[in-house]
Image 1 (cartoon, helix red, strand yellow):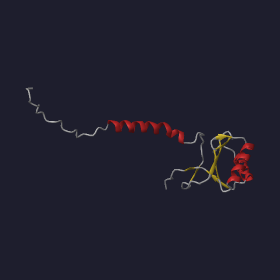
Image 2 (cartoon, one colour; image 1 turned 30 degrees about the vertical axis):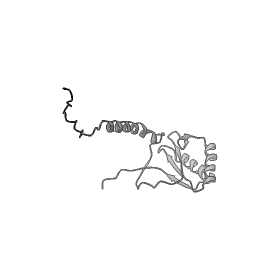
Image 3 (tube, rainbow, N blue to C red; image 1 turned 60 degrees about the horizontal axis):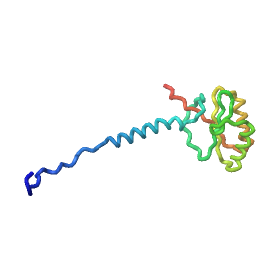
Image 4 (cartoon, rainbow, N blue to C red; image 1 turned 60 degrees about the vertical axis):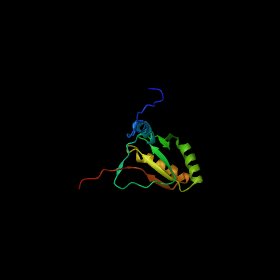
Length: 142
């Protein structure tokens, strides 16, 4: 470069491609988060529910879930509970809101008498809305 002369290079042209690497990184992180949290959103108690023909029921606005597993153990909202504690808890729920629905989930191998006992506890506590939860049967070929 000589004295008093400026370089005559052209300025660099702007980049016309979009850098998608940060977007892909964010999407992969979200995918990992969903993969890890999806199993936690389901009920922790494994049951073999009986099947019935019918449509999916609408969700009740106020409901408590009572589960009777294959061994006859009672669970209220996925927590094990004794029959006496269940009676007290259901009484509290009924006093707070008598229109609360009890969703009864019973394994198909549970004797019918055990299911009737659970229903009786709920009715004595003051809950008259009891819904039975079952899996929908696959469509039969006609």
